[in-house]
Image (cartoon, rainbow, N blue to C red; front, side):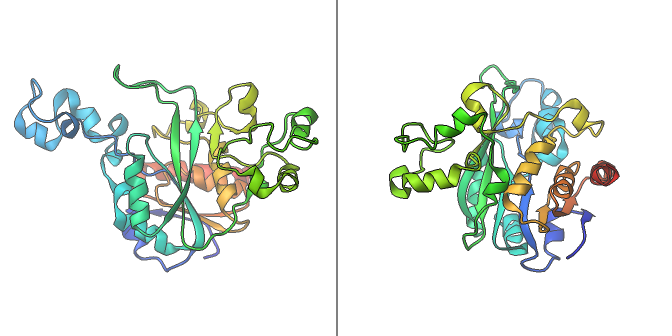
Length: 311
């Protein structure tokens, strides 16, 4: 496969038509399935008849019962289906990595489905932001979205050097390289990094070109947060007039594409939405294969993937 493609189809059914071991990576934002109100709260709600309860046409609950922000595409549970991830597993190459967004509430269900399909869940990236707002008074303010890091088979290195976070200044850099600093400064982003095991000289070598990419993507608090990759939520301008409620910021998706996709490789996105993955792939020198079921988003995808070519 040597060209970019946009496919308007059901992702599961289309994946079944593809050859094995085609894609170099997968970056996707599947439906979060934040529904149904009727299932969560049970029957017997005041003012709702039994038939409407069964069908999810429940008056005040109708919007939420459809899915996130009333979108019908979010009402399904495809991200929790082993069969779907088996197809993704089959069409990506051995050693390829899949990055899949999820909601905090049901991330575990997607991760289990990935494992059951054959993937090894090797990590979780946390995209942290400060602009979330609780949907109900009995919920915490949402402040992050997990991204599951799942690998097919053999262990291949990530493109870490392409994703290093620059030091703020020379003092920041010297904290890693001066004598006696082997473990005096907490290593960024992870408490599983064993300095004693790897050795101080190796640490110096691995960090001389910038901070080691962490499993946190932050939206911009000051001071120590500067050691992480910064990415704010998508702005109104970036979302445009598509009406899609879960558009991910381009800089975030560029980072993820760059992290796991080799140069000139092909990244798969079976839930393309408005095409952010396609635009990110072009800007990062990669190819894309986008699948989107909802026809109304196709014009947004085309607009996105054409934009870098016009610059």
